[in-house]
Image (tube, one colour):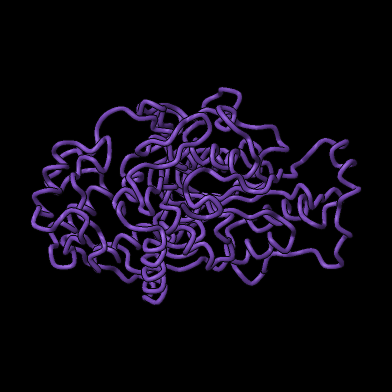
Length: 437
């Protein structure tokens, strides 16, 4: 178990409700509970650069919903929720932890690689078994610091969902808007460890990657992977300002929860407000099972905070909405005010925001289609703050294949009214070749 329930169940946070552009009668009823209007309203730093008018869009929502709003109600604070990896921090914290664990022999040999995931293919099982061997007793650390073939195979399965020989690593049926097997496989890799041990690995990785120079890489077998990380200064300032403005600020990640918790506290978000893949713990040890959400029970990764799963976690954990309703889009008073993400895994909850939808441009098709379409005028697309991508040469295929259906097939991205979003050009990017048709 960890956090308040130590992973034995999904503990609900204190009930909070996003104060959005609520009806006049709701704002009027809140007057009795509002803070006195501060003499100085919290402002985002003007010294940190944002793209276009994105700072102004965020500041507008802060002013509309925060302590300077006439209808601010501290009992029902506005909610902000952000993805973690590549949204608040440069590079992937979970991958950094895996890299550190591989370099320091912290992956325990499973009894069977096939048992780590219900979708792992026989080809992947064979490849991992052959590369990592069977000499190490079950439950003991694999020597991945010296057995680079084993480390290579693990990284390839995690990163590319295939074996080093190019065979498919995961197969079968799953809801492609609720989980992705190689994401769920990360906490499954740490089965056998305690939560405290995994947190310590995350801290070591964090400290090492934050100390490395920007642009540093690591060489693991045949893989060259990012070897550094940074908290984005603009995002630190945004979170600091939101908290001063009375927002309830949360992290919602598709990474491993103990890892996300250790990293998130460095930007001012504590464990109680950090949500990610929660492993089921038995006898004090992480298992290959993960906690469910809504009306979906615990499973071997059947649902994780991924696309629709992030909405479910926010609805259940932050707003206290239970059962099948947690998967549904809620009314305005039960939705976040500000959402931020960088990838299609974030598109649903970021789209649920009623104030500002912040997107960091990593060329992920569905979220970029929605961001550039800007249906409600409140989307804010921003290049990455460190090493931004150059312009995408071709338009995003919004009208044809940018949407992933639950069965994994591709289709057009549609607005709430059912109309198809036309293909979008990339206009918020770093230096490079201009976008072309």
